[in-house]
Length: 385
Image (tube, rainbow, N blue to C red; front, side, top):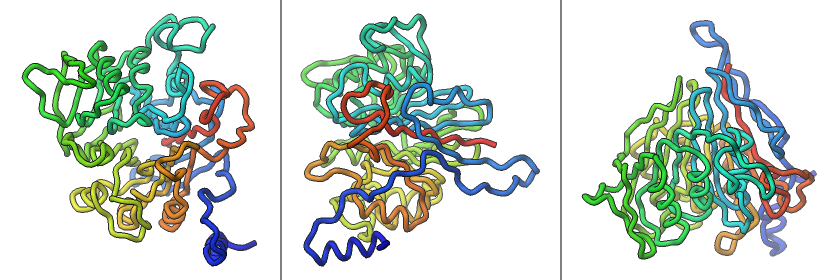
């Protein structure tokens, strides 16, 4: 059988467009090569993963010393849940797809953390939860709908302790709703923007007062739980050409393994990965080259050629690459770009994607319902001895 590279060459010579996505789904479970025992003789830290499509398949809470990374299949968007035995952290929670409430994010949280809130937090006709669950940290990497459309509902349904936001204003209804939900909650609000004297922010002609507002900066660290913490590698609140350039970038440490969360951090216009890194990716290479080296990478901008330049991927050198995307076009393209997939493979990464079975999901009883895209291919990565 012809290798993919030769197929692409033949297609190009024939004047045919390159395929948007290679065929062949990822195996439903897997494991990175097991490292040798640690110097002190303790068991090595393993990284395994499994595909999840129904609530019954979502694993129970991790044991002490073990961690879970859930890449939630939200369709065309991004949402990542990180869990330890003593904390829960949600990085983004949104989609560009039209879906009925509760959004897949909240339905997945109910399966992973337990139902919480009231009748708005469950499927129509289901019994309302009888208690409220906690999420310790919620991060909106940048104010775009496909990263934050569900976060106002999450804040309504769960008791969130800390909310992290770039501070870059996007004058949209969804972002206004998100800030209103933060203000109504008991969460501490953290941004990279300077805190105004009156603690007010105005979006869509509505002025919202944040009772608990603190500023964070590049280089700050936050303890999550036992053997878990994150460091902020990029924090920018000033308006620029695109909110993507304001993406909060976090290096998350879990039992000695590192995950890099980049949101939609970019290198510039759509270019082949061989072009030099620019924008946020160039900044990260120049200022945090050691810190971005990671075992697991949340691939920037859903696998678009605006991100994932060769220079950047070679600096990160991920063993596992997570791509969350769906069927709705970003501009004129459906992501991920095949060139990015090829580049990730070239640096030795195993790729996990949420979009492999969008067109024909064989599963009924999907988390969040069987209507519309998403809910078929969530992934749970487990880190532990």
